[in-house]
Length: 396
Image (cartoon, rainbow, N blue to C red):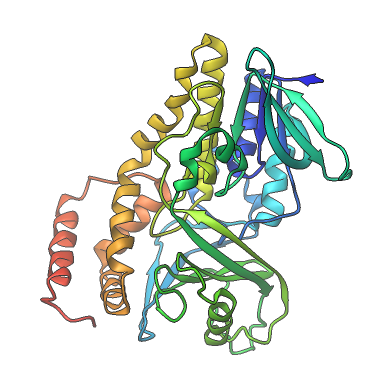
């Protein structure tokens, strides 16, 4: 039986980053991923992610210079970035590159399906998996620690951290379609992300049309069971003039919208990324937070291995909430209130037209930090939000 320091289950942004960092620290690490199952994702990469996690521009499929917000009454509000850009990736190619980079750093990359964790007499974990090329074989690998980065419905979490099954989920679906020809008449720009707030498209979240270079991601999400995701996406394509362009593939998956209260089992297993609930409420942004969560998981596991103290695993969640908890709290309030019905969505889009809101939103998104250098702008936004909440102004 092979023995390693750490087994990372799941090779998306969180798992691949954890494996990369652990390998660079000199740890014997194995990363296990089913491969071939890209996640539905708009694919936005903010500048801070590119800097902090060494993502070269060559990995981007395109860049965008602004967004357009669309209300239930089809009101359109442009939100130009001003300076800089947001990178876009296609997870079909981006995730394998992350796994390959981890392998080049020394991680043992394996393609297979996680089955379960078994325990030796001394309690040490043994990960059992089935390789992709052999459905009849079960392989066992022994480790000192396991990182579960295997998605919103984490099998590692279900077995080792029962609380993980309580996470709040949005079901996301998107279709990757051909980029429309410039003369097609489609309501689409190759450097703009469209975000649609409309109960027909999504009764409690939003729809999107995001450029991916030669392709386009068109999708939506909702937490309401039984809602017709494909039908809503078809309507979204119709409105954007993308009905007749070729559909290349489609994907669906659950996305968590709130960090779990517990990420580790107190012994040797730690969750990261979607498995830990590290997706931003309201926006559904997950790539940056997965990369950050994977790095924090690697740091916590490395400290546990170095000191022998299992309590170090809890540091991953503590650090994540210290860095991003306030933003997640604010975004959660936004989603619970503004996404409630179309009347509130209309008001929300009106607020998005405010230049102070746009500037502070882009500053926070691009750098993943709440800026406090413009107190008067914050005050103006507070007063305007209050007026909308009390119904003192009409959506325009």
